[in-house]
Length: 306
Image 1 (cartoon, rainbow, N blue to C red):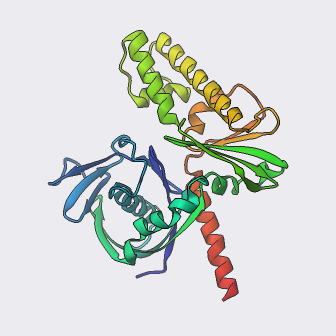
Image 2 (cartoon, one colour):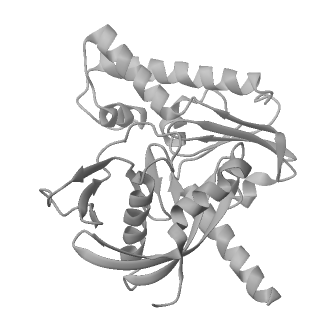
């Protein structure tokens, strides 16, 4: 095998993210070769079309093989982007919320590393042979913010990582997470999109897709009726109000210190935040980049100490 490659992956409820890619967590299995080769993973005699919408909520990501299969697809995408050999040892960098980091760290590492066994698979008609040699875990949200050193000059800042299902909160005091302030609220962007969909059906009799709703929230151009656009924006404003209220109830005073929003939901709420002392990091790949950056630092420090 060639030299080991370091790859950071953010295993979200709604989307998988690497340093260069983001794709939905949907996974459809086929006994026989499917209609397309795009985003198709072939593993252990079965075919899987990856990225086909969002899969049903799976709170325990180790309960099925789904997230391992999605990890293989993510690794293949990064290998192709970096123009690397397809037979390679992978040093994986991943993350968990601070609220469950200690509890779930070992379990998630073992789930991904699979006993360091060599794994053979095909992705988009190309053969891969990989061995996940190590899995280094980092706190999500915090890892992403550490890549933005200019935002951490304040003595205290609030970090809100808006994911698909959860919003992970923490306060940083002099760049260090205050453990007592860490919370994980089930108020992720999936809840926002689902509520908007329900209101569109009830009020206007429309069954709109998540892609259409997200396009409106991003301020994109579309042929959607103005009445529907107004309802979508109104519901998004209400979601933000509820989120900010929940943050305050968690003991984080959003009036007293700056707030950093990040994660997949940050881009969707960018146009709807009602105050100005806020930083929005709308790069959905930022957690994955943070994991990779911190893991590279760990490797460099280990090499120096040898």
